[in-house]
Length: 111
Image 1 (cartoon, rainbow, N blue to C red):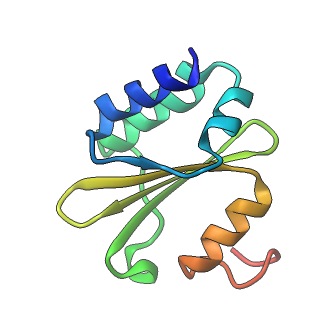
Image 2: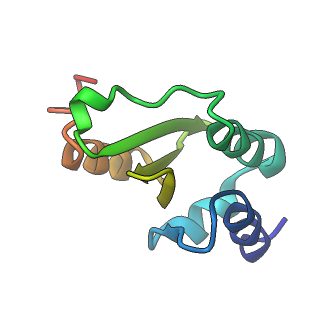
Image 3: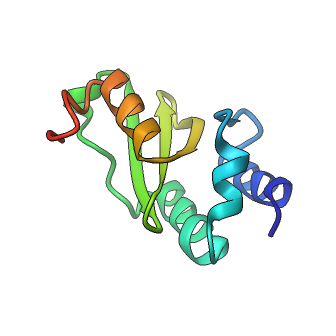
């Protein structure tokens, strides 16, 4: 599955309003078994079979995080009214930056 097909599949799952981070294409190409590792997980998130990170920490955002392979992370951000807004793929450095911005992580040693 190429990157555009992946984005199309994710839009089918979450809706056309979903946006992708700048590094998404690069990291999507690195994922092996996209359908088993990412697509199936996204379906489970949509079907509410996966628990998000605690809402009390994030106020108006609901966040789901998955490690894919040894270095790629997927972060899905859902904002109010059951709408999923963002999908981020990135390396551990990007993951640390986003989780700090969301208030989930104070340093690379703390979750």
